[in-house]
Length: 366
Image (cartoon, rainbow, N blue to C red):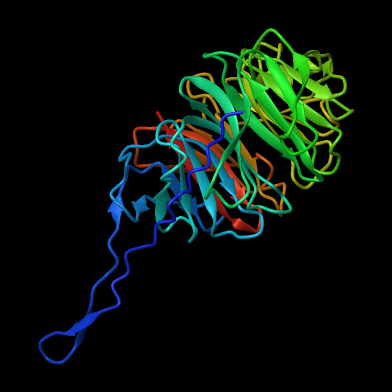
């Protein structure tokens, strides 16, 4: 396999420790030098009520107008966050987003997937496009060096998502634009094809308590489930439209599973999962057997709900993003408050800090 082993330059912030006496005897201390990039990363410190752009970098940015495709927060250190870019590789912060640094070594494009090892977060997996080909890379030193652990057979197919089983750190799932799901049982050393379909697989989600229970959604609609950690799958799309699905008939006219291209499992309740997209938001409390509608505040057909997040400490607190606005509910979707962002880009990804449920990050992209 091709290896990328050049060391990432760990850029120190430019801190000027020297000082001089200003007129009147007061000390004048020079401030650290930072630059700004476009407002593509936002942070909330109050669970999504208010937001602040975090767009400073410690060096003149290689990409002044980046697009965020993925985010990963260190589960043991809230200050360390990685962002995968559409172009320009990966950027990283060591102080909760106050100042970022662009990787000097990882410059592959379209970093769709980022995942940190839940036990040893210095181990990072990233899926990206390198020299026109979809690949997966792994770092074991917090991004200082990387090696290739998977490659597509030819130019074209992309690795869209990466998911690690939090209870089995060696179980890594990846999905591709050529309608396949692959799994590694040994932390990326080897891979096995566990599913082949007819549409690209957009996102995978694993149950909060049962690593054997996982789901994925297809481009164009469709949800599949495995109860055996990917040994077998069943199409459960029809459960969305089956008779008696509470509220879905009122909220989702298509009743076909179409219009849902984002999936997430509830971090606090086993068997709970959500789907969102142009069909709105629907929720299952029994592993996808039955569904109910969650009333969104905006019109999802005009502005699809591209991401949704559940507070890791309280499942009643839900956030979702559509276009240039974020919506927050404290009562499981009964009522919503809104926040409008000062950007022309659109919300791409939303992540709660697993260590601090008041902290949440948003990434924007064209």
